[in-house]
Picture 1: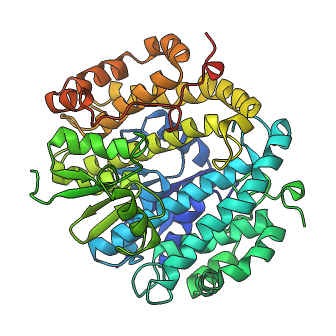
Picture 2: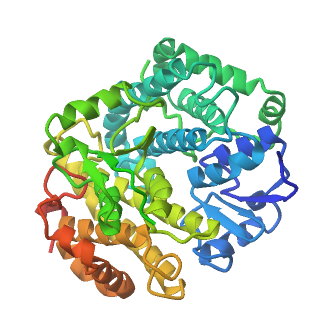
Amino acid sequence: MTETVTYELYYWPSIPGRGEYVRLALEDAGARYVDVAREPHGMAAMQKMLRGDGARPRPFAPPFLKAGDLVIAQTAAILHWLAPRLGLVGASDADRLAAHQLQLTIADLVAEAHDVHHPIASSLYYDDQKPEAARTAEHFIKDRIPKYMTYFEDVLVHSGGDHLVGKTTSYVDLSLMNTLDGLRYAFPHAMARFEPRIPRTVALAAAVAARPRLAAYLASPRRLPFDQHGIFRHYPELDPP
Amino acid sequence: MTETVTYELYYWPSIPGRGEYVRLALEDAGARYVDVAREPHGMAAMQKMLRGDGARPRPFAPPFLKAGDLVIAQTAAILHWLAPRLGLVGASDADRLAAHQLQLTIADLVAEAHDVHHPIASSLYYDDQKPEAARTAEHFIKDRIPKYMTYFEDVLVHSGGDHLVGKTTSYVDLSLMNTLDGLRYAFPHAMARFEPRIPRTVALAAAVAARPRLAAYLASPRRLPFDQHGIFRHYPELDPP
C-alpha cells in the first residue's frame, strides 16, 4: 500500500507534541519520510513554509505534511489523507469517517490536556498561571479524563474486536496509545487510580506498542521523550497522590 | 448537486454553537434537513443516539449528522463530508483539503473563544471563574483574535479572489462569517478596534450574509441568537471599552 513518495513532516524538533501522531503512522507503516525540522537548516525551511513561501493556504501552525506539491496542515486532516495511503485505515468510507471523527475527539482531548498547564494563555509561562492550573487539573482529572477515556473504552467494547475501527489496526489505535502514554506521563497518580476502568484501552495500547516497527521506533532516538515543554507535562503539584 | 436525502442534524436546541456551522451550509444549499432536537421528542432522540442506540461509533458530543445509515460527528468532519454533496466546496482534492484544514483552524478558534469564559472547567459556572476569565479575555483579545483573524485575512489576500478557497463560495466562507459574527457579539469593543485590520474578511462576511438563501435564513426564526449560554458569550467585563 505504501507509495514511493518521500513524505516531509514539519514539526517542532524538540517535543513529541501533535507531530507525534503523524510520526507514529509513518513509522508503523515503514514509510519514507524526512522529519524536516530535525535536519540541518530544517527550522528555517519550516519557518519559510509558515510564512507562506510554500503552498497556499499557508499552514496556521505545525504539524504539516508535504507530499509532492500538496501541503496539508492540521494533525487530523493529515492523518485522514495519509492513512489510506499507508494502509492504516479501512477502505470503506464508513471506516474512514469513523476513524476521522475519533481522531478529532482525540485532538480535543489533547488540546484540553495542554490547557491544564496553560489555562489562562499559551503565551504566559506556567509559573504565571500555577494557581489556575491547579484548579484546572483537579477538574481535568475528575471529569475530563474519565469522560474521554471511558468513551474510547466504550467504542472498543462495541467495535466487535480489538480495534477502535474495523478489524485491523488503524491510525486511531496508534493515536490512542500515544494519548494514554501522554496522560500517564503527565498524571501518573491519577492514571494509576483510573486505568482499571479502561482495561481494553490499556490492552490495545500494549498491543500497539509491541508492533515490530513501532517497538523499534519507540526504542530509537527518533522517539522524543515527553518533557516539560510539550503538550503532556508532568508537574507533581497537578497530580497529587 | 443537492442529493434527495433528508439530512438529520442533531444539536442542542437552544444555542447556535457548533451546530450553526453545519446549519449554515445546509441552509445556503437549500438542502432538506430536520433540526432534530428542535422538534417534539427530538432531545430524547438525540440522547438515545449519544448513548449508542444508533450507529457506531456513537458520537462523543453534538453536533452530529445522520444521512441514511451514516452518522458523522465532529463539526469539521461533517462539513468535509457534506460540502461536496451540497456544492459548497471545489471538486479537487486540493480544494477539499484546503477547506478542511481551514475549518479545523476555525474549530480551534471556536474552542478558544469558549474557553475565554470557562478557562478552568466547562463544568463550573462562569461565576465560579470570573477573575480567571478576565485574565484569559485580556490575552485572547490582545494575542489570539489577531493571530487567527489576520491568518484568515492573509489566506484571503493570497487566494487570488474573494473566497478563502477556490473561485466560488465554499463552506469555510460561511464559517468565517459566523465566527466573525460570534466574535462581534462577544467582544464588540475589541472587534470595533480590530476590524480595520481585516477588511477582506469583513467584506467576505457581508457578501456571505447577503446570499439570498442565507439572508432569508438569518432573518428567520430558525436562526438562533447568540446568548449567555453558547460558545460566543458577551460579558461586558471581559470586553472593556
